[in-house]
Amino acid sequence: MHRPITVKIKRLPGGEGLSLPIRMTEESAGLDLAAAVAAAVVIKPGEIRVIPCGFAIAIPAGYEGQVRPRSGLASKHGITMINSPGTIDSDYRGEVCVPVVNHGSAAFTVERGMRIAQMVIMAVPSVTILEVAELDETGRGGGGFGHTGH
Image: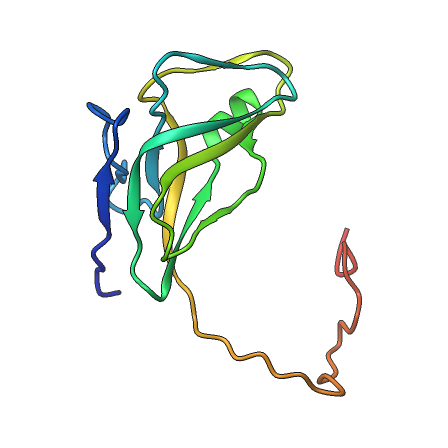
């Protein structure tokens, strides 16, 4: 079992009355993010809109917040994120917002408080980049973009 970490959240103007990020079940990986829109936002097919969440966050050093689409919105309505997953760095202190795109065939309305995305807090290892003249050989080699299967 992993040790729990504390993530500080500051509710911002516009986020009043909304739930803070919350797990919908005890074992959910993601914390659902609510839309902090002042009024309903209609997203036409093919349109991208940035949806505010009404809070800022202080993710501890050594971690990141990965913001991901909600599977139900994606599968039922074609609503997903244009940069999935999005990353919230540990030094970011601005409002958390979700850039969504409508890949569906009908307009979609985002209502205040609607669960619009989910956030997973993940450990980020410290990495040292080392330039070398050659890389180790593997069975795959340089094959990519569907090289390993259909």
